[in-house]
Amino acid sequence: MDRTNLESNYVDQNNSNQYYNRSYYDQGLVTRRCLVPSNKTLDKIIEFARGLEGIEPGLLREGLEIADLHRRLEAAIEQLLAGVGLNFTQLEILEVLFHNQDTALTPAMLSEEVGLSRSAMTSALDGLERLGYTTRLPHPSDRRMLVVCLTEQGRQFAGQMLPLRYQKLCKVIGTLSKESRALLLQTYKDVLGLLTKEGQV
Image (tube, rainbow, N blue to C red; front, side):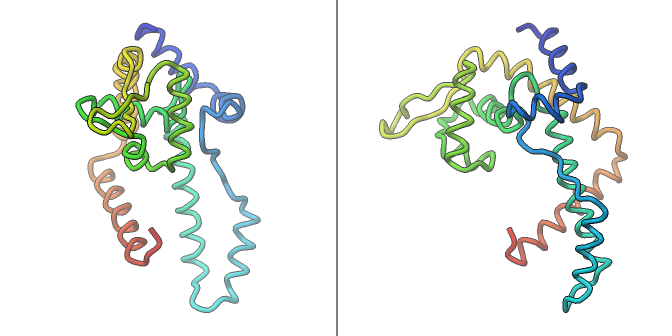
């Protein structure tokens, strides 16, 4: 597939409502559905919390709204960056392999890199192999293990696809001011630090 056709296919799929909401979700090309709790449900949660000790309803509402925005943002980014027959996770795997072609990566190492369970990684690699993008070969120093490698087709595909991904991400993030980006990054780091400290992550 040449770059022109690849980019056209990528843009067309991501501009289609069917891509995310119906057809492509059903085909498994988008891995998370954007969940938006109704205001009615949120109100019931807050009302329930009013009788609980140590819970400030206003803070709880804001926390739930932030969590919901995070899910919606994650889904929107996935919709924007995935495409051409791959889900977001498969694209991440290709990205890791493409940028680490000098390293013998096992399925377990890939699982750690992209945050997948071993079984989910096996399923993702099966799909990539069916597309002809990756292959599993004996480890060069331990024949009991396997390493995952890009095929020539996979290298060509990733070399064309990843620049499009990075261009789209830069276009979106670039609409924020430098100050807004810095504040967003710091806020995420602060929240993650608090959750980690509380033993939630």
